[in-house]
Amino acid sequence: MSDTEQLPLFSELGLAAPVLKALQDVGYERPSPIQAAAIPHLMAGHDLLGQAQTGTGKTAAFALPLLSRLEAGNRNTQILVLAPTRELALQVTQELISFNTHDLSIAPIYGGASMTEQLRRLKKGIDIVVGTPGRILDHIRRGTLDLSAIAYLVLDEADEMLNMGFIEDIEEIMHAMTGPKRVLLFSATMPDRIAALARNYMHEP
Ligand code: AMP
Image (tube, rainbow, N blue to C red):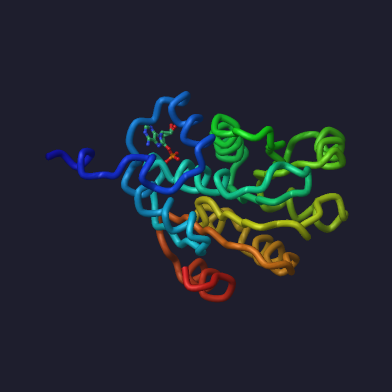
């Protein structure tokens, strides 16, 4: 039996029916190892610390269960994903949109892009914001991104964000979130500063 055959089916991981339907449309047949491990854990409502490289399917590993658990869109930001670069933010946004089964508003908010357009979209309301730390913090300080309804914070490629000098921004963003939320942290490596972030801000990941 090959490795792939030993992995469960997507239908065995507890995902919501509309998300399973979207998976068929996208054409993924079997979960990758990180997806098989992470999805049931996230469906059970736990924090997640994932040591994963790009290319392992880590985006769908959080996108599928979070979309399965999300209430219908209400245009209050419920998920905030932080990514190191504009390219990754766009890629994650595209993947979330491809599994978007219940008409959620999903948008990237990154530095270097027009503030006017971002302010217009934020004013209309975005259910899932995927952003780079500097620009997200800018919106939080201006009061244009409301964090009071956030249910999930996802830190994607956390070690890259550390390398790019975003760690203080991330800590400030995490401080600004006062409500109850689940934290998901993905990192290819686990430097001390990232491990400390996990210890301080995550609950039994
Ligand atoms: P990521 O590690 O999230 O950057 O994903 C790497 C690539 O694998 C992306 O292009 C995904 O669209 C694709 N992918 C993720 N999960 C699966 C899967 N279960 N089956 C086939 N392709 C996948």
